Length: 126
Image 1 (cartoon, rainbow, N blue to C red):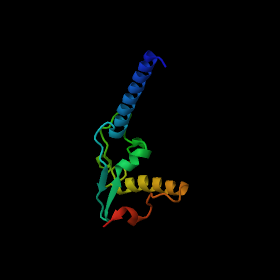
Image 2: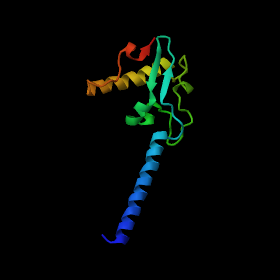
Image 3: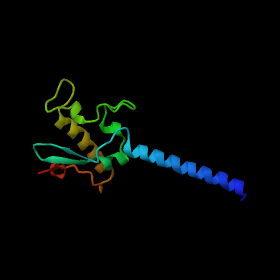
Image 4: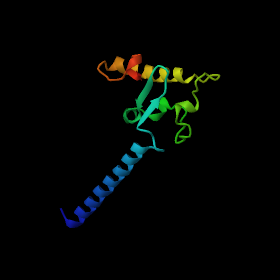
């Protein structure tokens, strides 16, 4: 390989690596500093939710249904879902159970050996 061709190839390879680094950083950090773990307070026992694990395989909009494109202005469930239902907005308990349990049960149905918890005490720790 001629020196000029090697230099062009090397520069292209370096540029591709830099681009992958930028894209990877953006995908990891997202639009705002997302928490790695989230603790959901509950009378039955607090639920430790590993946000980072879920981010690897699930699009944000799956849980954060209020996201519209790049608008990340209301990322927390509790911004809309309060202790008591308000009109058409379900209370926080119903919202979490509808979202988390449905997804975990579907996951378990497709992959019986999954670690997705489905029983009350699997999530609620005292």
